[in-house]
Image 1: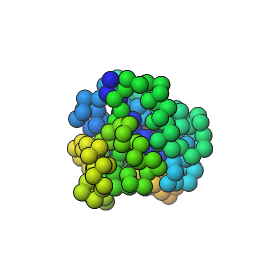
Image 2: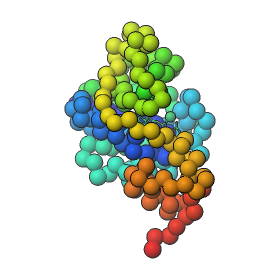
Image 3: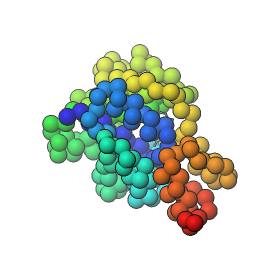
Image 4: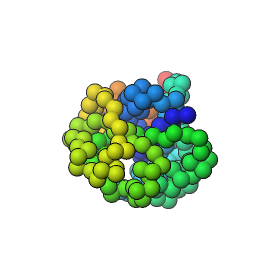
Length: 200
Ligand code: ATP
Ligand code: MG
């Protein structure tokens, strides 16, 4: 079974993440895509919003998609989330899976810096999607990494979670930049400085 893993902080989940997962699923015939919120990624500080909230936003956003699932392992485990550790565990639990890890262009170019990247490229194939600001240049990567990166086309989405957090904090709308369910959740829970609003 071909399974894609869509890893991220999802602080918050936005339409760029959704489109990346769908583009990878469609292009490579993935039977399922598992969205996996990290607890603390090695290259970042702790997210402002709890793992439980970030996981809940993902769950609410994807539950209508027949092929999308969530994987809560990194959030439940806590601490710094190393992808190689999680992937080791995944392969022990599901040895028959053919694993793909979906990433945006910024992460493609950053792959040489991932912990235990030599091991990761043995265990899975990456699927890279475009993202404004960082052209994908596989020639700039070591060959042993570049040959394990497939590309999927999608319309470029100039949205990042950082930009959404900034917009929300300054009173600007993030509606339609995030899935409707995420927008509802953020409003309901009063995340990112948005005033909580009881449903009327
Ligand atoms: P932040 O600004 O907090 O880093 P982000 O928007 O980059 O948030 P992440 O959770 O860091 O989102 O990203 C998870 C994965 O999704 C990464 O592989 C990233 O490259 C990819 N991704 C994020 N935004 C986009 C986008 N707009 N288009 C394509 N891929 C994206
Ligand atoms: Mg990011």
